[in-house]
Amino acid sequence: MSEAVIRATGLWTPPHSISNEELVAAYNAYAERYNGEHADEIARGELEALTPSSAEFIEKASGIKSRFVVDKDGVLDITRMMPNIPERSNDEPAILAEIGAHAARDALERAGKTPADVDGIIVAASNMQRAYPAVAIEVQQLLGMEHGFGFDMNVACSSATFGMQAAADMIAAGNARAILVVSPEITSGHLNWRDRDSHFIFGDVATAVLLERAELGDGGWRIIGSRLKTQFSNNIRNNFGFLNRTERATGDNRPLQNGSPKDDRLFVQEGRKVFKEVVPMVSDMIREHMDDLGLEPDQMRRVWLHQANINMNLMIAKKVFGREAGGEDAPTILDEYANTSSAGSIIAFHKHSDDLKSGDKGVICSFGAGYSAGTVFVEKL
Image (tube, rainbow, N blue to C red; front, side, top):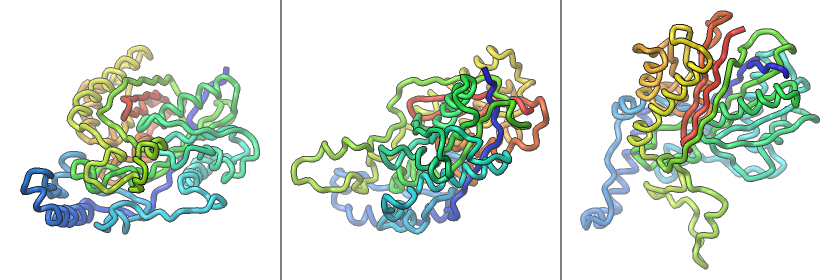
């Protein structure tokens, strides 16, 4: 059996950022236009008027101040309100593969490795842009890997941690020397920018985690233990899929996403229910895993949590440490990146782990739709 270590992480950030103020200005302009166009239906009670948003509301509710996106103009255009991502031919790199390869190269460079040192690519993300061929195989091709394997997996916001356990298990079993877990998240494509309750939540990014046999290098993080959990819930859902086209009546050529403020073929959630149910689920999972590993709260140096909501993270961190926690104990990147789905905890780890010393311990934790949750406890080498 070969022990797997996290050798390095990589990050790709889009060039465009949208502040809360910019986002609110676009949403409120859309809401005003919508209310005017549907004034009669609203007056008759057939439709609900859209309520204005505010930057203060967004930051108080989530801790988010801005978000990166692959296309800013399309999102802020109130006649469109979605990113403008031009179609590419089959001979051009797919955008998810392209940004995933950027993050993968960053991880390899930080580790002092090359694609020749890697045997597998797992693209673990919330939203794949196609059914097949696997995006991971295209990332493999873009990296110039003529050997090895690649496959995609989707466990929503927990995809990265699930991918890390899968990679560590394959390395431990001797099936690979090193595996890249790549999470390209263009969440701006599945977000309903016309829904006040969720229009501010997500941002775009790509991350990569290089896991490798311990004896093949120096430095990084030893994986003390990992654990996965799923529990079915409809409280976070996205109904977009290839079978949507079969639901249409003959002659109905409407697009699958028609721009409705409440379109369930985009991201939808029952936010209060998610908060109430997920916080105790994740808190208990981390503490139970700590107990099984023989770890006390004072042995935990840091928690790198899924970046969905600052208030959720503070409550979970308090449970983990047994005291008020935040800041250095539980770093946040929400203010700058917003919720980046499976990539969030990896960004937090990437940006807030270099200062730790040999022997320091922490946990990378994800949670999201499913419900799904994953914990990866690590120790600095």
